[in-house]
Structure formats: structure tokens, C-alpha cells
Length: 108
Image 1 (tube, rainbow, N blue to C red):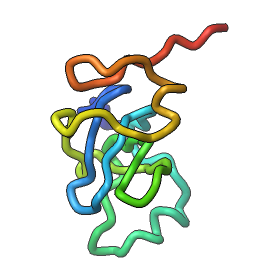
Image 2: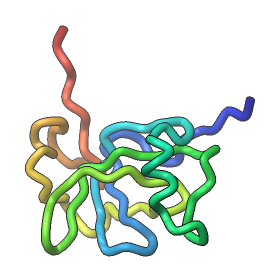
Image 3: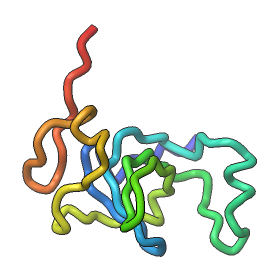
Image 4: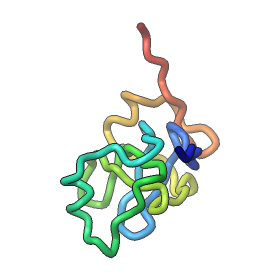
């Protein structure tokens, strides 16, 4: 089994290489962990490899806020563009420092 190390960590600000959206990483799957239906809905010529990290994002584009599930190959670091406006950022994260958000501690 191949062990893959994630390039981005919780709180990282990233943007999609192709599509016009950016977001904050709030969870990471070490390899593809979504449904087969979701995977097959991606046009075959654009489908990412399954054996890489996939990131759950609090995402935004000029029209809306949403969550996104994106392969590592389709993300680039984007902290220089400033804060992300998704309304759930403040629920999951504290302040933005050095281009990334600090995850809030979950109380037991």
C-alpha cells in the first residue's frame, strides 16, 4: 500500500487550478473517499487519480459559498489572496496567521 503525505494541512488557503474557486482546507482524505457516482460524474479526460490526497474545502466563488471535494493535483496554495469569506470559516477556525487559519480546538 502506498502511503501519501498531504501537501496541504488544515487551515490552508488554496485555489483550484482550473475552476474559479478557492477555499480553506477543513479535512483531508489520504486518498479518494467519495462515492463512485461522484467520481464518474467528472468527465473522463479530467478525472483525477484516486491514489492521492483529496481535500474538503469551505469554498467560495464570486457567486456563492459551498463545500468542495478536490484532488491534490487540482489545488495550489493561495494564501496571498487574503481571507476566505465562507461563513463557516469562523465556526471551524480562529484567526488567519501567516497565510493560514488556525483550527479551533474541539472540546470533549
